[in-house]
Length: 300
Image 1: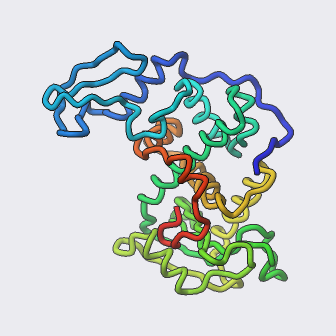
Image 2 (image 1 turned 60 degrees about the vertical axis):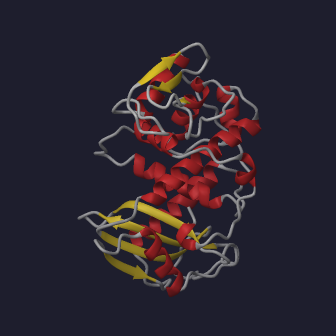
């Protein structure tokens, strides 16, 4: 369930002025080095502008395609301007709920919910491709409770495995938080086998020095702080989150945190758009049927 935080956004202005500007940005992101035919890899094409969405016809095999194919925008009936507004609002420090988004860009709640979940799916799938490497710390933690030296468990907390790369000063850099299958909402922690599954699926073990912390009283404190911050951030933006889509919201938090790191080569907007162009849209039926207990190594 999603809700309003009680404060309305100021009137929002997208950095793109019209549909043409949005389309050209998509084309540039889709083919940064020029057109490449998805069927035969030929690089010459003719641009057909007789339709609302520009089509590109391969000069060799005559296959026609558009910059929207294979992206989260494929098949959309919404103006791209609304999508680009949603992408910018997605990057707000605390995110944005579907209820607020629907009011700001003037779409129905269902449409806003679907837009945000398509974006979450893209960033989650893209993030799953980038393994942690270097100095890596891995915690067995609980999501959904306030950490306390006197409180080692909580009946409604969900087990997570959190991993991060560490800077020279010891602070978490790239972070991943994964819910543990069959331990969601029962207050039980991940065991050593589940930590090992996370490491095998999300860490480049060939180039990393990995230190894992399976015990509640011996966790990597900076990483534990990130898990708590994720919980506090999500609960401040959303009224309540069920377990079915919680992993997608955790992915959103960690990816947004990564995008906001200083010193990145791309701007936040550029990298988010690249994620949305690289990952195809998830069909609505698959999205609402997403199972909460996928294997840990693939739980992105």
